[in-house]
Amino acid sequence: MVKSEVDTSKGRRIRWAWPAAAALVAVLLAIALASRGAPTLSLLDFTTKRCPCAPGTHTQSGIVEDCCCDYKTVDHLNEEVLDPLLQELVKTPFFRYFKVKLWCDCPFWPDDGMCILRDCSVCECPEHEFPEPLKRPSSLGLSSDDLVCREGKPEAAVDRTLDTKAFRGWIEIDNPWTNDDETDNGEMTYVNLQLNPERYTGYTGPSPRRIWDAIYTENCHKCDVKVNLRNGVSKSYSRYLYLDALALAGLYPAVSQIGLAGCIEVLIEMIELGRVGYGGWGEDPSREFCQEKKILYKLISGLHASISIHIAAGYLLDEATNLWGQNLTLLYDRVLRYPDRVSNLYFTFLFVLRAVTKAADYLEQAEYDTGNPEEDLKTQSLMRQLLYNPKIQAACPLPFDEAKLWKGQGGPELKQQIQRQFRNISLCKYALSCILSALMDCVGCEKCRLWGKLQVLGLGTALKILFSGDGQENLAERLQLQRNEVIALMNLLNRLSESVKFIHKVGPSISKTMGGPLSVPTNLRPLQRLWMRIFG
Ligand SMILES: Cc1cc2nc3c(=O)[nH]c(=O)nc-3n(C[C@H](O)[C@H](O)[C@H](O)COP(=O)(O)OP(=O)(O)OC[C@H]3O[C@@H](n4cnc5c(N)ncnc54)[C@H](O)[C@@H]3O)c2cc1C
Image: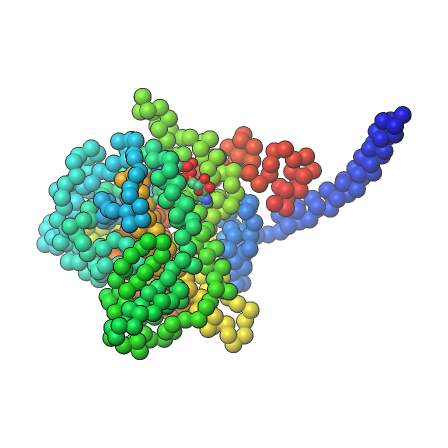
């Protein structure tokens, strides 16, 4: 009897609940459909309105979070314009060689990384296969057929005394944004990237885990700057030394890193403190700091997702038969089931694309000289097609709005605040590039280290372009990029473009088979799942 009463009351509750739930669902669906049906920013909107820099959601529809283009447009542009151009571009002699220091000491902990595959090792370029003008400006140049490295060949020493002469207008000085000394030719080697695809290498376990952990936990908060003045006075500052101000004051040559353990410690010998131009020592900007930190996190997460996607796209399925193919389970487990990682990949892609288009005038004027006029003309033409592409300009003219993102509430303090924030990100950029670059020396797998270094340099270059000043004005005159930075930037864009293309192609069907993104747990009731699908 009692039981029956309970059942009855339950039944009543259910009967009551359904009409209410149905009404609720109807309302929610109407709202959801209205918001989904609402036009995303059209091409025209971009030309007439300010970029919304959408707060976005972590679903792969609508506007990419903190960016100015929607997913659909990005996929479309990538497929139609970016991917075909980039695929061609990275094959050109100019973009397929990368100068890198492969044998490095880890400044943080002894290298315990073990690489289990032959694929871990990098094919370096024998001297005779490296484009002549990169060695001697007077040489005749090689046909594209000669520019082929053969995998498995022993590393050969290359003549490294060439870059400054071969690339007029390109500056070959030590890059303060990286941990490597680019002028140290004795340690640098040239690598043909085409022969060293980024794919599965078998580098797993505690070593890469520790590096990723370090990458995610390092941030600008930990950057202490120690300043030793000539007069013997030593001062410590917590990250608020404006390194950009020092750069402007021409003090970078006097800056030397004296240690990288956990933070950046910089020894600056200055004749007089007064030489530090505008800005000087800053006050605590921590209140404005989180947005920049968020951006840096998203960039790293996007890059990490891209690396995982390349591992999944080129996986050694059967070592015995050397069978390579796609590992879609890995793709799902590491990337697709986390919508934020996918969204961070799109964010990073748009961020780097914005840097490339922002530096269009500079990149167009740069010399792409490898001594093979035919190939070099092709490189230049591909760059132009990419930099001034009407489809990109119409559909996604401002992939990421670096100025808008840090905009405050307005008023007279606005400009000052933006300037301060630019300096923060500059310092962050320094920390990011420097620490990440140093961490790359701890990557135990050579091929992973190659691509890690290239992509970190590419990210650092994008940050440098976007935040070297506070506007577009005279960027081409102000900006100075090294050849290797441009190579890294465009190859990074290509890596990201390939990743976006791959998940756009296979993502939806895999998510369907594997059960959708993690944010919608499978143990939820249908209504709860519907709610989560609509509102995240
Ligand atoms: C610089 C670098 C380059 C590498 N290149 C290669 C390569 O070319 N080929 C190769 O086979 N291996 C490469 N590896 C190793 C590879 O990235 C993985 O570390 C390895 O495959 C082990 O994967 P895992 O499943 O332990 O997760 P990992 O990818 O190592 O991830 C570690 C942890 O980070 C978090 N995480 C993972 N992805 C994201 C994301 N997108 N955003 C936020 N958090 C995330 C998760 O908590 C995860 O458990 C590289 C490693 C490094 C550090």
